[in-house]
Image 1 (spheres, rainbow, N blue to C red):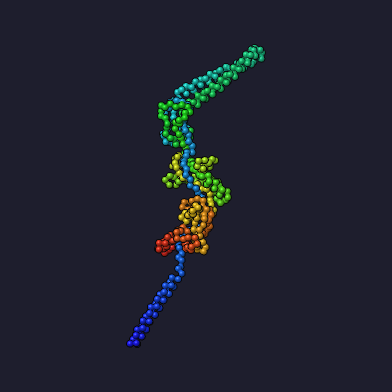
Image 2 (cartoon, one colour):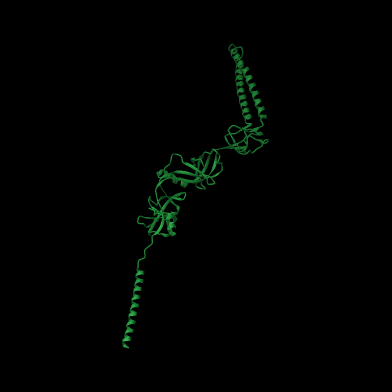
Length: 402
């Protein structure tokens, strides 16, 4: 019995020892697993490689078209309109008649002035020989000196009468010609404000019609005085170079299409609008097909110059901090994320023009900004590859950005 009891005791002791050993092994494995250092995962982000390159700096400004020349047609003499001699909305040449005013009274005045001139010339014909005869007679005391002086005075009066009659005839001729109301300039004529039978007066305030020259045509745009001063300083410092002496301008029409003809900047106004702080710029555009009409809203793209070392980056890579400053995340040479504060000037399409804060060759993070923070490691990839990697299905031909 003792042998059997001892054997059972030994078996129980061996089982307990085995259980204790197993527990110790499991505890050791658990401790080993918990104490193993976790490896930090490196985020894959899409980057844009910053590069300096010459860039045409352009500014898009709102504006409206205006006619190159505008002439309001008004009568120079009073009378009744007999005829309208043009088609409304047609193109007319300078000097062609537009209206006919009743010329009867002016024709009569012209005939009267013509007769008065003939009478004055006849009087002059008799006065000149009389002076000559009296000159000979006064030498031999055949007439008195007073009679000779009277003859000379009458001759001079006759010459003055001829000149006065000439001027009256010329004035009558001008008034008679003014009964034909002619186009002062070449261009497109608008609708008529009067019809035949209407009474018009000389130099009246209401225009009979308007003629506008549409080729070429002006485009007046506005630019803030701050932008104008900034561009001027950049040109003076040499960071912005002018291409030639005159800035080129292109147009974007109200429907978004681009106007076929290029224009040139003519001048900048000398006065700043105190209400808006803007300066008016005027550009001149060819308009051979009359596609542009006065009063149209357009957007003018003005070429300010060439920046030889321009840095343009995608807008999605630039954010704002609580102070309103432009910031960006870049991957430095150590492969870690670094935050930069930028100075930007303006936008060029979907890109920011950066004046400082980025250098040639920097890797700007444009995708995956939410996965990184300053000081954390990051793996640069092409933007499309980073997006695919985030979704777990990176394309086979994706390459890391260099």
